Picture 1 (cartoon, rainbow, N blue to C red):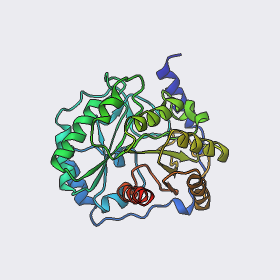
Picture 2: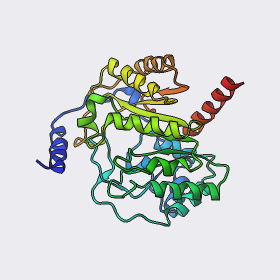
Picture 3: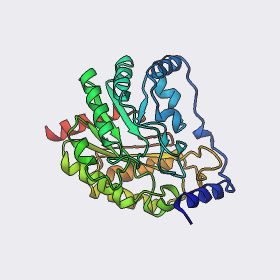
Picture 4: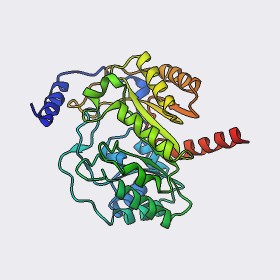
Length: 309
């Protein structure tokens, strides 16, 4: 059976599994005041955002504040993760003008801190690392005081990707584990838990002064013990910051929600994370990797300054 067929059958089987009813604490208030203004600036520069592509529940909240997470390298992913709403297929050629358009949008939105992510590009020799570099450098040239956070793919089998990124002015390096190790075959087919940990460890070794960050979704059937083990693995690899949010099913063809966790459970996970020595943790139903990224980065800097004083 081919890998693509296996993924297709996996998605098909998910459609037969119902998720539990959404509880009240999952409902998102809709804001309108500045959303259209943000949307117009992004569309004018032909910017793709993970906010839209991944159906992020925080879109209205972030766009109200002129914040958005930029997704480079197109809107088509070479992987087929069962939790993700981004389309899978053969990507288009890399647009060499995209770094200029992204930098222009950052300037127009007057962003002090920007998050740059991408689809997986297994079709490219470097996984898209050079395009990340070009985008980062153009942002710094256009908006030199803007701090930059990257949320990268795993660059699997791409030998020089981290070396390329390490030469840029990055303030936060984020790579999400997404879920516990035992769920990788059903949630992140094509990825490897220990490879993702190694990505975080390796970048920290190359750039010890850059904050490292990783995030997970819960509600996929993982146990409390598995989450604690994941936290331990991240700390063993010197990760500074963890984000924990509730998984929300994009459609019936995606992995079902096994459980909606109460806010109290997220508070418990926050305490577990902080007790393990993370510099900062964010844990709530609506927490996402780039939600409140700018505020969290400011918190990280203050914590480091206090510890070094």
